[in-house]
Image 1 (cartoon, rainbow, N blue to C red):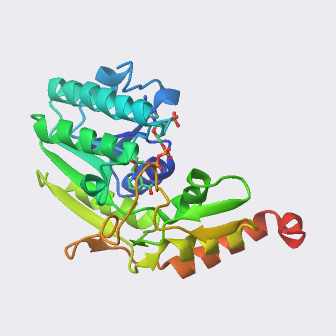
Image 2: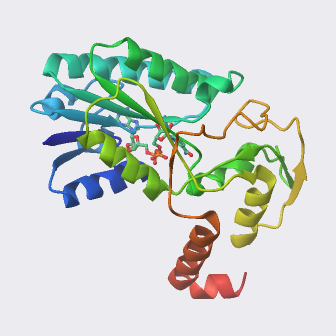
Length: 262
Ligand SMILES: NC(=O)c1ccc[n+]([C@@H]2O[C@H](COP(=O)([O-])OP(=O)(O)OC[C@H]3O[C@@H](n4cnc5c(N)ncnc54)[C@H](OP(=O)(O)O)[C@@H]3O)[C@@H](O)[C@H]2O)c1
Protein backbone atom coordinates (compact mmCIF):
# COMPACT_ATOMS: atom_id res chain seq x y z
CA UNK A 1 0.00 0.00 0.00
CA UNK A 2 1.37 3.46 -0.90
CA UNK A 3 0.92 5.92 1.93
CA UNK A 4 1.86 9.60 1.65
CA UNK A 5 2.67 11.38 4.90
CA UNK A 6 2.23 15.13 4.47
CA UNK A 7 4.55 16.76 7.02
CA UNK A 8 6.65 13.59 6.96
CA UNK A 9 9.72 15.40 8.32
CA UNK A 10 8.04 16.76 11.48
CA UNK A 11 7.92 15.38 15.02
CA UNK A 12 4.96 13.08 14.37
CA UNK A 13 5.52 12.68 10.62
CA UNK A 14 9.08 11.35 10.80
CA UNK A 15 8.16 8.77 13.46
CA UNK A 16 5.09 7.72 11.49
CA UNK A 17 7.09 7.28 8.27
CA UNK A 18 9.57 4.98 10.09
CA UNK A 19 6.83 2.94 11.76
CA UNK A 20 4.84 2.41 8.55
CA UNK A 21 8.01 1.50 6.62
CA UNK A 22 8.94 -1.03 9.33
CA UNK A 23 5.54 -2.65 8.70
CA UNK A 24 6.40 -3.03 5.01
CA UNK A 25 4.40 -0.18 3.46
CA UNK A 26 5.62 2.06 0.66
CA UNK A 27 5.74 5.46 2.34
CA UNK A 28 6.48 8.87 0.87
CA UNK A 29 7.61 11.50 3.38
CA UNK A 30 6.30 14.71 1.82
CA UNK A 31 7.23 18.23 2.88
CA UNK A 32 8.47 21.48 1.31
CA UNK A 33 12.04 20.22 1.75
CA UNK A 34 11.25 17.24 -0.47
CA UNK A 35 9.48 19.44 -3.05
CA UNK A 36 5.87 18.90 -1.87
CA UNK A 37 4.12 22.04 -0.68
CA UNK A 38 0.43 22.02 0.24
CA UNK A 39 0.28 25.83 0.24
CA UNK A 40 1.54 26.36 -3.32
CA UNK A 41 0.38 22.93 -4.52
CA UNK A 42 3.87 22.22 -5.88
CA UNK A 43 4.67 18.52 -6.21
CA UNK A 44 1.26 17.33 -4.99
CA UNK A 45 0.04 15.49 -8.12
CA UNK A 46 3.35 13.62 -8.43
CA UNK A 47 3.43 12.73 -4.72
CA UNK A 48 -0.16 11.46 -4.69
CA UNK A 49 0.03 9.39 -7.89
CA UNK A 50 -0.83 5.78 -7.01
CA UNK A 51 -1.40 6.54 -3.31
CA UNK A 52 -4.24 4.82 -1.47
CA UNK A 53 -3.84 6.71 1.80
CA UNK A 54 -2.72 10.23 2.75
CA UNK A 55 -1.93 11.13 6.35
CA UNK A 56 -1.82 14.88 6.98
CA UNK A 57 0.42 15.80 9.92
CA UNK A 58 1.65 19.12 8.53
CA UNK A 59 1.78 22.09 10.86
CA UNK A 60 1.77 25.84 10.35
CA UNK A 61 5.17 27.55 10.59
CA UNK A 62 3.40 30.45 12.38
CA UNK A 63 0.91 30.12 15.28
CA UNK A 64 -0.32 33.72 14.86
CA UNK A 65 -4.14 33.69 14.56
CA UNK A 66 -4.58 34.83 10.94
CA UNK A 67 -1.51 32.98 9.66
CA UNK A 68 -2.45 29.64 11.19
CA UNK A 69 -6.03 29.87 9.89
CA UNK A 70 -4.75 30.68 6.40
CA UNK A 71 -2.29 27.78 6.58
CA UNK A 72 -4.80 25.06 7.55
CA UNK A 73 -7.51 26.36 5.17
CA UNK A 74 -5.22 26.69 2.16
CA UNK A 75 -3.32 23.49 2.86
CA UNK A 76 -6.51 21.49 3.48
CA UNK A 77 -8.24 22.80 0.36
CA UNK A 78 -5.28 22.12 -1.94
CA UNK A 79 -4.56 18.71 -0.47
CA UNK A 80 -8.15 17.41 -0.54
CA UNK A 81 -8.65 18.64 -4.13
CA UNK A 82 -5.46 16.89 -5.23
CA UNK A 83 -6.49 13.69 -3.39
CA UNK A 84 -9.92 13.68 -5.07
CA UNK A 85 -8.22 14.03 -8.47
CA UNK A 86 -5.71 11.28 -7.72
CA UNK A 87 -8.38 8.86 -6.45
CA UNK A 88 -7.02 8.61 -2.89
CA UNK A 89 -9.21 6.25 -0.83
CA UNK A 90 -8.53 7.46 2.71
CA UNK A 91 -7.54 10.84 4.15
CA UNK A 92 -6.25 10.70 7.73
CA UNK A 93 -5.64 13.91 9.67
CA UNK A 94 -4.29 14.69 13.11
CA UNK A 95 -6.33 17.20 15.10
CA UNK A 96 -6.64 18.14 18.75
CA UNK A 97 -8.93 16.92 21.55
CA UNK A 98 -11.34 19.69 22.50
CA UNK A 99 -10.62 21.76 19.42
CA UNK A 100 -14.32 22.70 19.11
CA UNK A 101 -14.59 23.54 22.83
CA UNK A 102 -12.04 26.40 22.82
CA UNK A 103 -13.23 28.93 20.22
CA UNK A 104 -11.14 31.78 21.67
CA UNK A 105 -7.92 30.08 20.57
CA UNK A 106 -6.86 31.07 17.07
CA UNK A 107 -4.87 27.86 16.67
CA UNK A 108 -7.80 25.66 17.67
CA UNK A 109 -10.18 27.63 15.42
CA UNK A 110 -7.82 26.84 12.56
CA UNK A 111 -7.95 23.12 13.41
CA UNK A 112 -11.78 23.32 13.38
CA UNK A 113 -11.55 24.87 9.91
CA UNK A 114 -9.24 22.04 8.80
CA UNK A 115 -11.70 19.43 10.13
CA UNK A 116 -14.66 21.14 8.38
CA UNK A 117 -12.92 20.96 5.02
CA UNK A 118 -12.25 17.24 5.54
CA UNK A 119 -15.84 16.45 6.54
CA UNK A 120 -17.12 18.44 3.54
CA UNK A 121 -14.85 16.76 1.00
CA UNK A 122 -15.64 13.66 -1.06
CA UNK A 123 -12.57 11.76 0.15
CA UNK A 124 -13.35 9.11 2.83
CA UNK A 125 -11.61 10.17 6.04
CA UNK A 126 -10.60 9.51 9.62
CA UNK A 127 -9.77 12.35 12.02
CA UNK A 128 -7.62 11.47 15.00
CA UNK A 129 -7.87 14.06 17.76
CA UNK A 130 -4.92 13.87 20.15
CA UNK A 131 -4.29 15.61 23.43
CA UNK A 132 -1.06 17.62 23.90
CA UNK A 133 2.16 15.71 23.23
CA UNK A 134 4.56 15.42 26.21
CA UNK A 135 7.15 17.14 24.01
CA UNK A 136 4.76 20.08 23.56
CA UNK A 137 4.51 20.96 27.29
CA UNK A 138 7.77 22.93 27.03
CA UNK A 139 6.03 25.30 24.56
CA UNK A 140 3.22 26.20 26.98
CA UNK A 141 5.40 28.52 29.14
CA UNK A 142 6.88 30.12 26.00
CA UNK A 143 3.38 31.08 25.00
CA UNK A 144 2.48 32.55 28.39
CA UNK A 145 5.69 34.10 29.69
CA UNK A 146 6.41 37.78 30.39
CA UNK A 147 10.17 37.36 30.88
CA UNK A 148 10.79 36.52 34.56
CA UNK A 149 7.63 34.60 35.34
CA UNK A 150 5.25 32.25 33.61
CA UNK A 151 1.49 32.47 34.05
CA UNK A 152 -0.26 29.20 33.47
CA UNK A 153 -3.78 28.00 33.70
CA UNK A 154 -4.29 25.27 36.26
CA UNK A 155 -6.94 23.44 34.31
CA UNK A 156 -6.88 19.69 33.81
CA UNK A 157 -5.18 18.22 30.77
CA UNK A 158 -4.24 14.70 29.70
CA UNK A 159 -1.03 14.77 27.64
CA UNK A 160 0.23 11.83 25.64
CA UNK A 161 3.57 10.51 24.36
CA UNK A 162 4.07 11.29 20.67
CA UNK A 163 4.93 7.60 20.00
CA UNK A 164 1.48 6.60 21.28
CA UNK A 165 -0.11 9.10 18.86
CA UNK A 166 2.02 7.71 16.03
CA UNK A 167 0.96 4.13 16.84
CA UNK A 168 -2.71 5.19 16.75
CA UNK A 169 -2.21 7.01 13.43
CA UNK A 170 -0.48 3.98 11.89
CA UNK A 171 -3.36 1.67 12.88
CA UNK A 172 -5.91 4.12 11.47
CA UNK A 173 -3.95 4.62 8.23
CA UNK A 174 -4.00 0.92 7.35
CA UNK A 175 -7.62 0.40 8.46
CA UNK A 176 -10.87 1.46 6.78
CA UNK A 177 -11.97 5.12 6.93
CA UNK A 178 -14.26 5.75 9.93
CA UNK A 179 -15.74 8.92 8.39
CA UNK A 180 -15.66 10.41 11.86
CA UNK A 181 -13.49 11.39 14.79
CA UNK A 182 -11.54 9.20 17.19
CA UNK A 183 -9.49 10.36 20.17
CA UNK A 184 -6.15 9.41 21.69
CA UNK A 185 -4.89 10.61 25.07
CA UNK A 186 -2.38 9.85 27.79
CA UNK A 187 -3.09 7.52 30.72
CA UNK A 188 -3.31 10.28 33.38
CA UNK A 189 -4.87 13.67 33.95
CA UNK A 190 -2.83 16.44 35.57
CA UNK A 191 -3.10 20.07 36.56
CA UNK A 192 -1.28 22.08 33.87
CA UNK A 193 0.83 23.98 36.40
CA UNK A 194 2.25 20.76 37.83
CA UNK A 195 3.62 19.45 34.55
CA UNK A 196 4.84 22.82 33.28
CA UNK A 197 6.76 23.20 36.56
CA UNK A 198 8.30 19.73 36.24
CA UNK A 199 9.31 20.23 32.60
CA UNK A 200 10.88 23.63 33.40
CA UNK A 201 12.75 22.20 36.39
CA UNK A 202 14.07 19.26 34.38
CA UNK A 203 15.56 21.68 31.84
CA UNK A 204 17.11 23.93 34.54
CA UNK A 205 14.63 26.79 33.91
CA UNK A 206 14.23 28.78 37.15
CA UNK A 207 11.41 31.12 36.13
CA UNK A 208 8.62 31.57 38.67
CA UNK A 209 5.32 29.92 37.81
CA UNK A 210 2.16 31.78 38.71
CA UNK A 211 -1.15 29.94 38.59
CA UNK A 212 -3.78 32.15 37.02
CA UNK A 213 -7.30 30.96 36.23
CA UNK A 214 -7.44 33.66 33.53
CA UNK A 215 -4.05 32.80 31.99
CA UNK A 216 -4.53 32.28 28.29
CA UNK A 217 -3.54 29.05 26.60
CA UNK A 218 -2.85 29.91 22.95
CA UNK A 219 -5.35 32.75 23.23
CA UNK A 220 -8.05 31.10 25.32
CA UNK A 221 -9.04 30.65 28.95
CA UNK A 222 -9.53 26.99 29.79
CA UNK A 223 -11.90 25.00 31.96
CA UNK A 224 -11.31 21.53 33.38
CA UNK A 225 -13.30 20.14 30.45
CA UNK A 226 -11.52 21.98 27.62
CA UNK A 227 -8.61 19.63 26.86
CA UNK A 228 -9.42 16.22 28.37
CA UNK A 229 -10.49 13.26 26.26
CA UNK A 230 -13.84 11.49 26.32
CA UNK A 231 -14.51 8.00 27.72
CA UNK A 232 -13.93 6.20 24.39
CA UNK A 233 -10.45 7.58 23.73
CA UNK A 234 -7.60 5.22 22.91
CA UNK A 235 -5.21 5.50 25.87
CA UNK A 236 -1.45 5.60 25.35
CA UNK A 237 0.80 3.32 27.36
CA UNK A 238 3.59 5.74 28.32
CA UNK A 239 3.22 7.64 31.61
CA UNK A 240 4.53 11.21 31.87
CA UNK A 241 6.83 10.41 34.83
CA UNK A 242 8.61 7.66 32.87
CA UNK A 243 8.93 9.79 29.73
CA UNK A 244 10.37 12.74 31.69
CA UNK A 245 12.89 10.51 33.46
CA UNK A 246 13.98 8.87 30.20
CA UNK A 247 14.20 12.09 28.21
CA UNK A 248 16.16 13.86 30.99
CA UNK A 249 18.56 10.89 31.18
CA UNK A 250 19.11 10.88 27.42
CA UNK A 251 19.71 14.67 27.42
CA UNK A 252 22.30 14.23 30.21
CA UNK A 253 24.00 11.44 28.26
CA UNK A 254 24.13 13.65 25.15
CA UNK A 255 25.71 16.65 26.97
CA UNK A 256 27.07 15.55 30.38
CA UNK A 257 29.15 18.67 31.10
CA UNK A 258 26.28 21.08 30.39
CA UNK A 259 23.95 19.16 32.71
CA UNK A 260 26.56 18.85 35.46
CA UNK A 261 27.02 22.64 35.43
CA UNK A 262 23.29 23.26 35.43
N1 LIG B 1 1.62 19.71 19.53
C1 LIG B 1 0.64 19.02 20.06
O1 LIG B 1 0.59 18.77 21.27
C2 LIG B 1 -0.47 18.53 19.15
C3 LIG B 1 -1.55 17.84 19.71
C4 LIG B 1 -2.51 17.32 18.85
C5 LIG B 1 -2.39 17.49 17.46
N2 LIG B 1 -1.33 18.19 16.95
C6 LIG B 1 -1.22 18.31 15.49
O2 LIG B 1 -0.19 17.43 15.06
C7 LIG B 1 0.26 17.83 13.77
C8 LIG B 1 1.75 17.59 13.64
O3 LIG B 1 2.45 18.33 14.61
P1 LIG B 1 4.05 18.24 14.76
O4 LIG B 1 4.38 18.80 16.10
O5 LIG B 1 4.51 16.87 14.38
O6 LIG B 1 4.51 19.27 13.62
P2 LIG B 1 6.01 19.74 13.28
O7 LIG B 1 7.03 18.93 13.99
O8 LIG B 1 6.04 21.23 13.43
O9 LIG B 1 6.13 19.37 11.72
C9 LIG B 1 5.41 20.08 10.77
C10 LIG B 1 5.55 19.42 9.42
O10 LIG B 1 4.73 20.15 8.48
C11 LIG B 1 5.51 20.35 7.31
N3 LIG B 1 5.02 21.50 6.56
C12 LIG B 1 5.07 22.81 6.90
N4 LIG B 1 4.57 23.56 5.89
C13 LIG B 1 4.19 22.69 4.91
C14 LIG B 1 3.64 22.86 3.62
N5 LIG B 1 3.35 24.07 3.12
N6 LIG B 1 3.42 21.74 2.86
C15 LIG B 1 3.70 20.51 3.35
N7 LIG B 1 4.23 20.29 4.57
C16 LIG B 1 4.48 21.37 5.33
C17 LIG B 1 6.94 20.55 7.83
O11 LIG B 1 7.85 20.38 6.76
P3 LIG B 1 9.36 21.04 6.78
O12 LIG B 1 10.13 20.22 7.79
O13 LIG B 1 9.86 20.85 5.39
O14 LIG B 1 9.18 22.46 7.19
C18 LIG B 1 7.00 19.43 8.86
O15 LIG B 1 7.25 18.20 8.22
C19 LIG B 1 -0.23 19.28 13.60
O16 LIG B 1 -1.25 19.33 12.62
C20 LIG B 1 -0.78 19.67 14.96
O17 LIG B 1 -1.89 20.53 14.86
C21 LIG B 1 -0.37 18.69 17.76
